[in-house]
Image 1 (cartoon, rainbow, N blue to C red):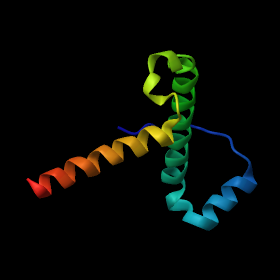
Image 2: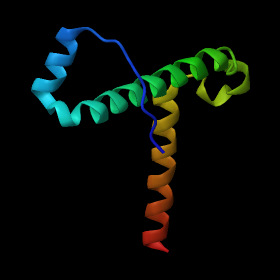
Image 3: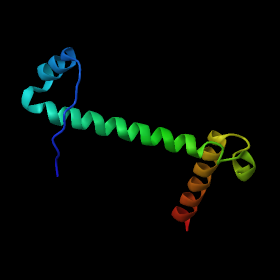
Image 4: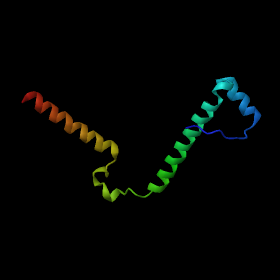
Length: 87
């Protein structure tokens, strides 16, 4: 359900929006922009709330770095794949 609202924005901004999407596309453009900004703000708040939740002590497998860990996983996969081909 849509709701009419009154929003005050600079005339230059309205003109620029109208040039890009037309007067009939203005509401959809502003709606999409607001939705994107809300998503960004929610994600930022979630990242701030989660700060400090992860510790190196909880993940000793990553002591040599993520790259080394992923390389090891890929190596293990290659070995399993080769064994399946032989067997």
